[in-house]
Length: 287
Image 1 (cartoon, helix red, strand yellow):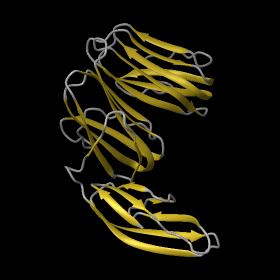
Image 2: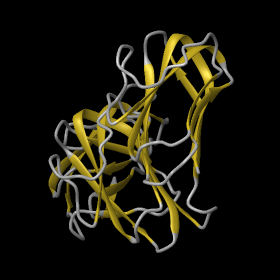
Image 3: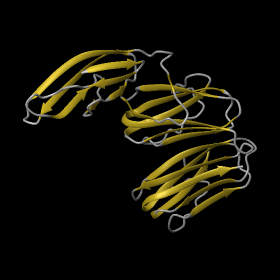
């Protein structure tokens, strides 16, 4: 196999062939505790260093061959990787305590900045800070939720470089990161929709929304789908089934919360499954 490194990201290519059959499977180990069975995987390492990578291939008759090589990755520009607005970065992984660092440049006049992680397994935590890289003790936004579904929404963000850190609260893999800058827009208002939400009974999806000073007509709604989802809203900290600011608590998936004159700050949203639900849409907005 061959490899090509770009800062902490390494693309691997396997060209193994079998003269009297076919390659049935591949097993990669990347030297940092992570693995893959893909033909040409990409690995994002949590830290600079030299890693021992092993590929074991098995053919259709059970014969195997193994190759081991070292790859060296560097942090590059301060250990950060540039994000392009609206372009997902998939298949992110890190060990417990491992960190991945990114940044996105926000121009003057932007109406919103949305940063999200989703998918995969384990527990990744999202940290965001304007102007400097966040740490576990210094950050501007940190949803700090269980699992890999976290988001940060910033209305009317200042023109600056925003730094993003994904940290392994526990080891995670298969996570997708996307940052989206919206320019223009109507007078500083904001609206965001999250479709196709699903959870089994007793479980929940959680989100955050940054509401700026002066915002009005803050609205949260869930609609559509099947089952019974309950909407919980709380300002300043994540709601629970016993601690919340708003909870319509209706049958089905049609629930709304309207706050005419909301306080600024981070608002937390929980969509909990009273009964298993799927294909529910969450909408949040303010003027």
